[in-house]
Image (cartoon, rainbow, N blue to C red; front, side):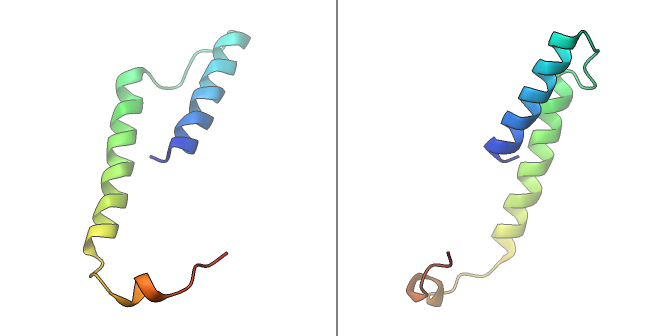
Length: 61
């Protein structure tokens, strides 16, 4: 999971606790979701073959 997604989720859970609502996930469940999302992203990047042309191409803004 991207750090920004984790930060947003953490902020959401913090506000839920301040308002007295119950949290939908516990810590272990959040770690599993993070592990699964990071693994899927890593597999998608690992499947793509290396290409030297990517280093020469100009940056997209």
